[in-house]
Image 1 (cartoon, rainbow, N blue to C red):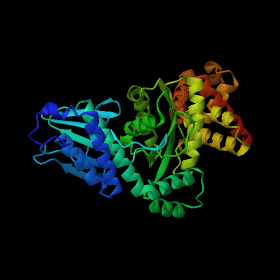
Image 2: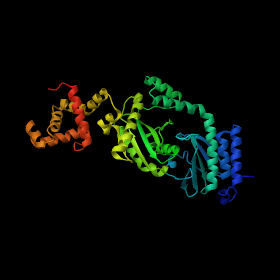
Image 3: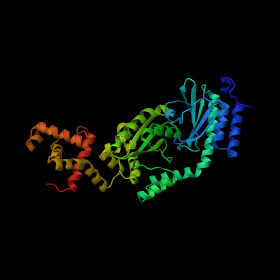
Image 4: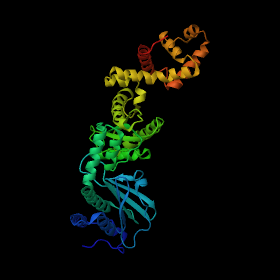
Length: 413
């Protein structure tokens, strides 16, 4: 049997028979057995489809490119920018790049659930590909996966082992952490913010891929580590505490968009706290787990919950020790105390009195010998400085608890 030549009619290309697909599979197996490599596998599909085939790794870096004689014209250097936007059917993403250039992309399958694909195979043709060519694409993607995993099995194992060690807090110092990361081919940022997504009803590998694509603008990493059923871990690079807002927005977008893409019933997210030290990334992940669990209970499915917004609820949920409560009180009250010291104001005193007398503005004004509008102004200042809403019971509980702990830990006048 001979595959389609460049002179074959377009309909011939979209009607490969079962025997032809089987022969393509056999040819691919022989290429792998003979050590032909990814270029040879790509050429098999390019010849069969009278098109061009691009092979990229898991980070969309170029691995191989093959074209049938005559080709299809200029093809994009990567399919990464089109993968998320394309229509997905039976594991193949299709995109029309122009009236005369169409693309179909398949992720290389992986041996186990929860692992990321080792790469992607994209077929470019002048005519839209039908189901037979989609099957041919998946055959070559499967063969390419075997080749990639065979060539990089050691590397893949080293990366997985690195992430498992990192998340178990196995590194004593940042230098040894970065040395191990370099050996595993992992580039570490200044710090990581942990985020855990619960994707209900989606296949693990599909969910992980969809989350990774949704968080691509943040350069997040979804390490291939074992997670509870339905959950996907993301490590989002951050430099400053202000980056948390950017991460939250990206997570919110993912919670909105991923369910439809991954055929999931719902998606919920918990995000850990900001830690400036890269060694504290695992702590942020653990906080993200608590945020996910509590956020789902407090706000329901489809929510995005930050650990910093949970206040004392997070400590109670985790069964925190005394030192954790003291650190919590410091984080809650220190900004207000610092503001008072710098500006010679009485905001902390006002807040404590406001709570002690049952939130009575008139009585607070009388006791402090100021106009009640001054009390309203101070309460607004307090809300802005501490980023809380004094009308919300949840924020009040956290502040009241923090004030009580602060008072026990500091000498009061």
